[in-house]
Length: 288
Ligand code: SAM
Image (cartoon, rainbow, N blue to C red; front, side, top):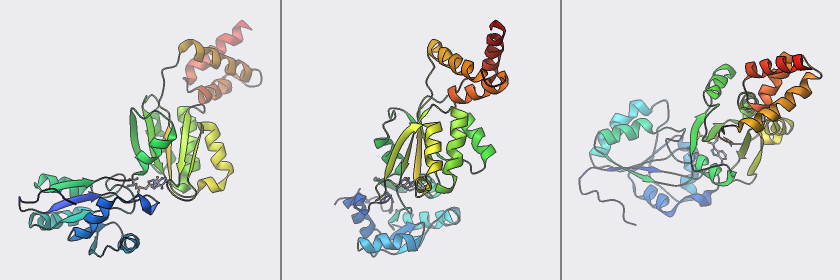
């Protein structure tokens, strides 16, 4: 394997992707780089130790995680400038993608150190490639805030985002996050839950957000493991068809409920504006 020319004298920082589950997804180039470098910066030496053992890589490791990255980056860059080569990996997937490494890579590049990506798995691209939602334009939002108020505020900023939305989510927050998404984006927006990708219990399930949330809530098995949530981007409603559908729902709900509640529920189901629906409901009542 020939790696980039290092005749300039300085060392190289390799940013190496590792599997997100299936060990067979590591590239031959990644293994060779990990064997050849002087040191490997890892998030957790015990976790990555198992990967090293599996591929018979005996290169020394050093721990670089979110708590010490800023502090360690200058010393590592000095070692790189002195000619050492370092590989950066994370616990899984591509470093810097919701993982540490940004401070080190930025400082290395600012200091004139060569930074070489060794591409491979990332849950983001893996999920997108099989979800069946539009991939020509998408937005990666990483993890949503853990607290509901902040999470809803973030989601509200994305209501009219036309590109496919991709979120990472943890298993213990998936039910509440899907509930917030259904409430903010509307229950009928298409979404995909991509769970345990490349692993034994890989599940890729598509439905409307409301139904998806109920499906996950009803089955604790779907709340386990690692997961990516993808949400269809907002589409400019075809005014006529949406208004007709919203009016149909509003009319049915108003048979049983006060206008205010009917408008609120219709807004949730269609993603339309609650106040405009309320005004429409009041007008419909008058013409009865
Ligand atoms: N750097 C990683 C990457 O490139 O995908 C992501 C690291 S981030 C700390 C971990 C999150 O990625 C998980 O909480 C989950 O949302 C997602 N993830 C990682 N592996 C996954 C898998 N096998 N299946 C589904 N989601 C996964």
